[in-house]
Image (tube, rainbow, N blue to C red):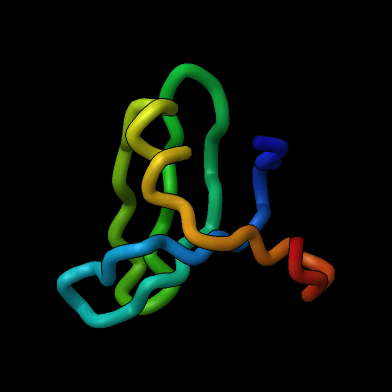
Length: 64
C-alpha cells in the first residue's frame, strides 16, 4: 500500500466517537493516525493498519 503522511484513510470499523476517517500523521513500522471526528491519536502496527484500511482518500480529494 502506498500511504503517505497527510492522507485521509477510511477504516473498516468506526472509532468510538462514530467517525471512520483518519488522517495519517506518521508512517513507518507503526502508523500514527488521528481521528477526524474527535482528534484522538492512535498508534497501530503497520500490519494491523494495512489490514483495517478500507479506502485511501488522498489530501487532493481523489479516491484510490
